[in-house]
Image (cartoon, rainbow, N blue to C red; front, side):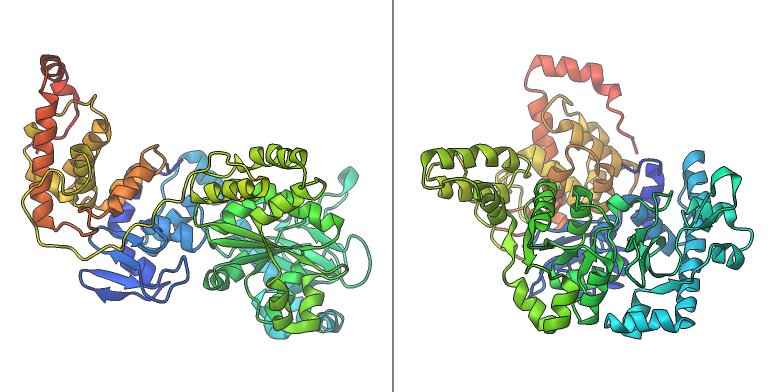
Length: 569
């Protein structure tokens, strides 16, 4: 789960942070009964369906099913990786993340490199203010000083040793960050970037990890990027993602373009949700990173042959990311145009008009495959199905995949076995008063009901005597239930969020998430804490009786009684 971060630290961290404080700093919450509510930050809505439980330390959206704890929220809202989210939460409560010696050494080695890169970016900005030539160039490209400041755009003067002069004694670090190149034959290192407009590349936490430089004239290479370094891996980073994150979330979409100037020019005209790949083709890592921030990606390419080839590579890389709630589109520009030229000619309105011509990814998939086929013939239709099925197989199971297959069936006029769309669950209703145990009220098996109650009301475990947990561990679901009971029994402060975190990388995590957010009763209403205590005792009693139905079960339980590992109060 946490790799090199101990589980006990994650538990302590989640016990110290308050999810309400974490979310309220980013999304304004309002008190709503015993919980807090807001319009969901992960999809567009007018009526709040996003709730945060301070008791459970858990959030859930009844509109788009987004859910999780404080760690999950930072990963989804900020687009952070797991470790980054842990570090951010730890910083907020003054904790130091423990690591093994190797990981700690890597982290300690990286800290001064990040500081150095930030200082270099500041120096480049100061040099821009001193260069009329560079300022004039940016003006001719239509950029304002405000936009240049927002993206921390700078300038590096011509010369071979400006960095060494400005950062004396930092030669080894400058080489490590790729800002200097080691000279051949023992010659002195020299600057990688010279006489270029400099674009800092930031990671998801806003730290400068590399640079892109553009010449002021027509020299080659026109653009030059930082090399691979301990901080910078261009195949997994996107220029402008840090700056575009909030606008992209508000728009529920990110626009992927091909160049730094495209991103900056669009932002100059108020289109703030654009990002760019860093000289590489759009890949699955890019799509995964964007889908952690937005539900929709719009790939913007030239309409020429090269642009369509790049679009196809982006399509095949994105299909495996199209789980339910995600979508992608393709926007092809007129020949000879790029986003920079389009927005300059027609402004934001012109670019948005062009956006209306974007093509859904599945439509483009079939359009591309059918482009050289005779779709009026049986052979053409059969070939389309043959080519499409391996690509559709890469889409995760779910409604999206079923609908994509149905579209293929419509094109070829033949059923391929797609399933009908599942019904949308009814809206969740308010909690009802407790009632006597009913056995079938929840619509779940006794095992699933017991797991649900453990997750949603961890304190119910303390209301049952330890000896009553003599449940056959071979029963389906018993292994998970007994683990939950052990976790709850060992810590009276246990919360829903902390329980789920124990299973983050396990095969049962998705199922447990569903139970943690599932209404207890079939009509969509919740059970209260008093009812939960009665129902849990009833479920455990049923499970214990089922475990003792046969003599073989009794013998097995007797042999295993001391091996269950349940802590005793």
